[in-house]
Image 1 (cartoon, rainbow, N blue to C red):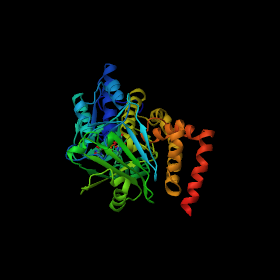
Image 2: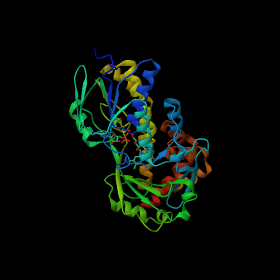
Image 3: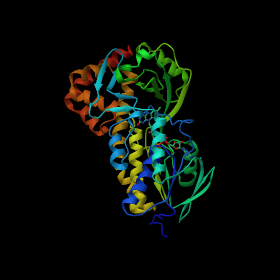
Image 4: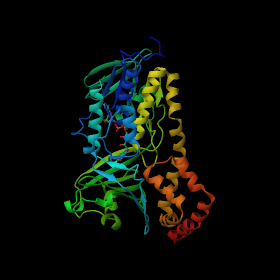
Length: 413
Ligand SMILES: Cc1cc2nc3c(=O)[nH]c(=O)nc-3n(C[C@H](O)[C@H](O)[C@H](O)COP(=O)(O)OP(=O)(O)OC[C@H]3O[C@@H](n4cnc5c(N)ncnc54)[C@H](O)[C@@H]3O)c2cc1C
């Protein structure tokens, strides 16, 4: 068979059973079924969800529920939902602002491991072969790919890399196809278990967001979950010392129970595009592609969406290098928005380091378009292009710049 045809019986091997891999697997199965065909889909997942975890705060953003329902006829089980998030509280040095969610489009707090287990289980029920094994290498040939795992060898027509930021898989794709993994931030996560009396309306069901004034830290957040508060700190080369300094900030300490956590969990998330994320007989999706919003992630949504696009590309156009450009085109809007996202991140970073968020918050309390821009930044509900347009409005800029510049002056004295 030629390179332009995806052989249905050889099918597709997917490395990674997170939202990107499962989004791709379910789409391959459902699109093939709609066409009266079947296709072999094999998902390799190295973790046993429940014993092992994908690092995540477990906030499901709108419209993930709709995407799962419309695309796969899947409902997020009510029992999985631990809390409905009402909005965000953004902290400056002295000022705070409440940014409320649209009640018709709330974010839902869940245990990420339960989501992973649910999605992978549903894929299995729909005929996806799930192999609980780590992939160790991939070979590319003109007519097929060979995927090596701890459980043996799988020959497939194409491979989809949904392996997140796995260093081993990045090294493998880098050696085989010249892939360069996306730039990323490191995260530390800690969990606080407050007394039961705190649980109703924990943190007022709001996500509390901070831009701490530490050199290596980009942001910190407190997220109310079912019976605990998840604390995330993100930055470059951050250590437990940075987390301890963050937890010691009075405004953070005030929100947490006195007894601290003993465990910290380390993770990473991408902040830019990977190089060579598509090519001859392979497409990379989700975090592995770096196709995520570079500030507030919505990483789960984007992983499912890019997984769907990869599946549609393989079924409609085949596994060739030329066909993979269709995938790139589907990702175009996300890629274009990353440029605006980088500008927004740089502005936030400069404000954090050299000035203060206080003047911005004060102005946002008066200026609805600035408040909306802040809401979209922290909620991730709008493209960065729209956010930058709001911020770039001459009226907003004119009111924002003088207090920002004077705060810069004061901070330097
Ligand atoms: C601290 C933190 C908090 C976050 N909070 C949120 C949030 O609240 N909401 C949100 O939407 N996003 C959040 N994100 C981002 C989100 O977790 C990711 O964007 C999303 O999970 C990406 O999905 P994925 O399928 O691409 O990769 P992943 O979810 O990373 O899945 C990759 C899978 O591949 C498997 N794998 C890797 N290598 C191999 C191998 N060699 N063989 C077999 N299997 C392999 C892994 O075990 C894993 O299950 C957060 C990220 C971090 C780090």
